[in-house]
Image (cartoon, rainbow, N blue to C red; front, top):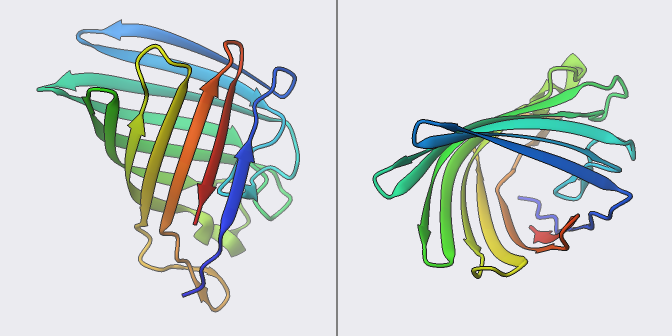
Length: 188
């Protein structure tokens, strides 16, 4: 099993990224929408859009249920994943969160789909189970988190002769500067 250490550092600066959010109440729950434009889209240390400006949009439906919050959502971004043809990344996810004081536990499932990818590398489409623990002190502009993602592709061949081992561990921190938010993460 090959292990690669990926160090990813993201800094969202005023000139590099802009985001917008909106929320609509739906019964006891809420429907939120988001949109952003980033100067570069990097996920787990891999450039997903070949140094290009990347727009993205998403929607999340959250509903309280017996002390937990259930959620389902979708996110779409521009992507140029290894084939030069351009295209999209379409993610769909669902999960449950539980807040205990300043700590939140998030357990869920996500699928990553790249419909514009060349048929020779369709194996980039994948799915994962995840568990995240976030500490967000009340009224503070920062958070700290850890996450574990378990591959759910059954070891599909991502490239000729190599099975995908996409289990992933991450520690991260964010800081909210008001107009922009900065994120740094380290993953293996």
